[in-house]
Image 1: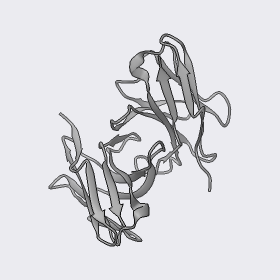
Image 2 (image 1 turned 180 degrees about the vertical axis):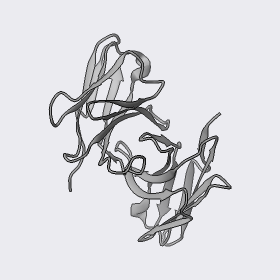
Image 3 (image 1 turned 90 degrees about the vertical axis):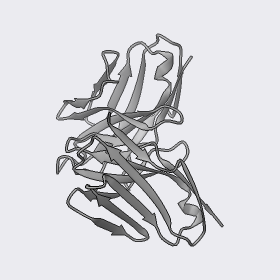
Length: 111
Length: 116
């Protein structure tokens, strides 16, 4: 069956450290993968998109990697801040226009 | 910055009643979507809409659901006869549609639907 697993339901880290979130998928052939941020009671907010033929993408303090052999994406937030505390969602796109979301990782950055 | 808006923010209804959830997508976007998120669960795709017709739909989007773009700005989701299990947060999203499958989708704030 198809699965998208985000390995940690919750992750706590100290301010200033790098947070690393994992997204693993099974029985999908994604053309691209996106990461979103979701705050409580709000809609997902787009952060980064990485295509199947890209290994790494960066945007400010964010970095995402995509390994189609391992079927895994890693999402890094460097120099984390309390304002980064939120739930982070990975979403796969298979070439059509709908997205398949993981269950999310709730990140808490402790001051 | 343009954003997707949704009304109402919270809708309470009795089981068996019809509800219409409304969305105003970003004005120059061509693709529109509805997703739902049951409390504590993942965001699930319901339907995408392009050029005034459904582009794709999931298994969740059965005959009880319909979508419409009644005018140049609104995009609606109708649930004909609500069930308890329809209680969820419903998100509308839109995208430019320039490169199929590589669009960034912009989500609205959601409508919380509670079915009693």
